[in-house]
Image (cartoon, rainbow, N blue to C red; front, side, top):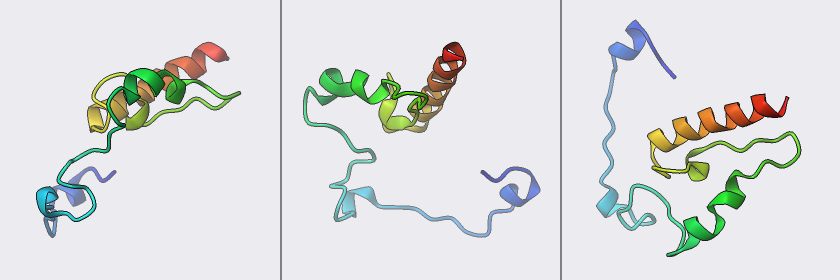
Length: 84
């Protein structure tokens, strides 16, 4: 992630027309079929050995968004620390 003077002096801006995007169908995030999150969400978060999963797809809320990714990383960090 860029921070500081270089990040504040952006040279270009890219905007995406999600509604016109061929493969996403206009949605900003990917989702399971109805019932998928409630049926399988816990399994996506379940640690495997020493590996603790984090990412927007493993969030407990705001899946698919940066808020979900950040909270998921914090959750995984707490789990990993507790497992030590």
